[in-house]
Image (tube, one colour):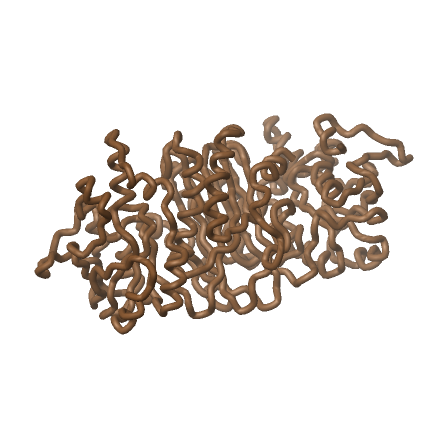
Length: 309
Length: 309
């Protein structure tokens, strides 16, 4: 009863029973009607206080980020977000914290049409698990395993901003405009959908850093990737804070999309209404290779050697 | 990479890509094909060490129970289990613990056709969040909100066994045959489906205790329930350990089903191939009332007064 009252109090209005949500929060299960002919893309991520976010992190940004990281997974498949289930564990009922969390969650959920259809609240160490499902037309999913030699490697937006913001904060400096990239990253949901519509079939979201995540594409597609470091898209704020290419290559938490596509699609790509940079190409072989403007190999930053094997 | 290797090592073979699982563990999302014309029932529960299970609990039973409590939610709707996502947080990689957990999980998943399609492993306090989705024919869901005055109130199996086992264990006594009811409860999935097929439209699983859970039905259905305490189904093991009616009324963790149905369905109910006991009826009013054989009201055990208002 206490749990149900809590859920009613904080999370009511986050679903609108109707076409696809037949029954939301309040029964043993939610009851959902998947749209005819669509596939479902589904993902779940846990954020733990002290590991994925600081214990004293702003609850608004924790609420935002717990949804954003899952939305980013759907974006990487090209799916349209639909239903979320939330499990919230907290040491005690902290009204201020919960209100902040819900504010951050609600804003992003509204922006991307996410309905909260179920979940639970229990007592325990502060952590959040969010499960998210989206819709997808058949044969339109973007997978890690579809890259082919000759494909261009491209990324959305700019790289390294979140990692640089974290480093500045840890050093006691003000990250200025970079802070939002770390605390309230905007998942590339619309961009992912447009790429899938255009015919892109290989994509991953950059959560662990470009080299690591592109490495996943290489591994699953049994191919290599060659990246020209000089072509990495860097924001002016990143350059202004003297960000270096290593940070853009290794920095996690950007939640941009990294995707590959045949060069024949490049003209259509350039017509899309958001920033895309082609940074290299897929080749036969394995692992990620970094090169300078003249094509000379650069060493992979220390610690990533295992991604190239 | 470490996470992915772990997942591969322990959880491979827990999904069989095919008809409804287009893509399992290993990409940003799992890709699923819901069966045409079916609805989805979905639920998510978190088990936290030290709260929902003892820190030194047998990992086989923790693996079993993390799936069982969610299966029980699907059983209460009358749904057929299909897809699970698992998030596992643990302080360090404990090979023995993981092997035990997976053994318990795998056995139950196999029994009920559950495919593990995604999830994550991360470092943190020991806890498990499982999200489970099942299929359901349209209009066949059993809901908490459908009870009507005149309905019979029935339960599957026997009540109080899990709570009595816990009490005996806490007192340092051997609960004997009752131990399995606590540690490896068998969710009433097949029973729930048969009840839904028969036309039962009101059901809840007994996780918080009969009075509490039947109270949820009363609240959601805006009605009262009158229970004859002498009719509660008690196992011979329960009687052998001198279990009392209070334990059967209040004991959680039984994962039996409590359901209501019009008396016209009673003949068909009696033909079902599992134990069902009718223990009372739904009336106008609110809250759960307990009566003895002569119809005299009994006091609700202390602590549950709020369920009757």
